[in-house]
Image (tube, rainbow, N blue to C red; front, side, top):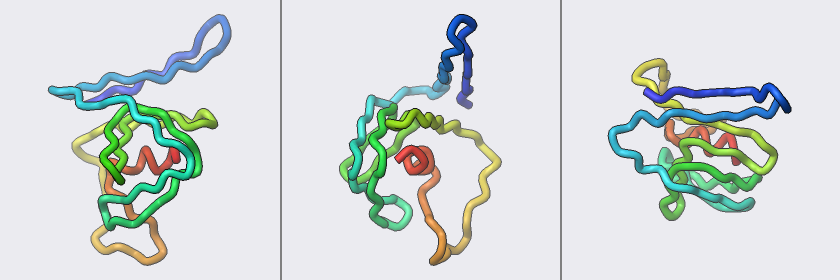
Amino acid sequence: MCTSIFQIGQVDGAHVLSRTMDWPQLGAHPVFVPRNFTWHSVYDDKAYVTKYATLGSGHQHARRIDMSDGVNEFGLAVQKLTFTNGSELVEEPGEDKIHLAPFELSFFLLS
């Protein structure tokens, strides 16, 4: 289980967001994704185009992005924390909904 850490500097009030990555083998790498990058969801292969540039830690595989932690060009920061329970998955996709693989949510929010 990963742990999120948020600190506020006493002198200047700067915010520092960090985390532990409690995995047996760390496979994350630096990832930069520019504006207007087309990526495809693993869920249904639907194409999405990034609106914001994003920098983070994770994996980039051709048309697929898996970003564990990141920040976009406007300062929005997202962390993907993994838990063994608490998920509620959709049984049937809806036409009026955006469907993503669970690991894609953090990158979707940033981009």
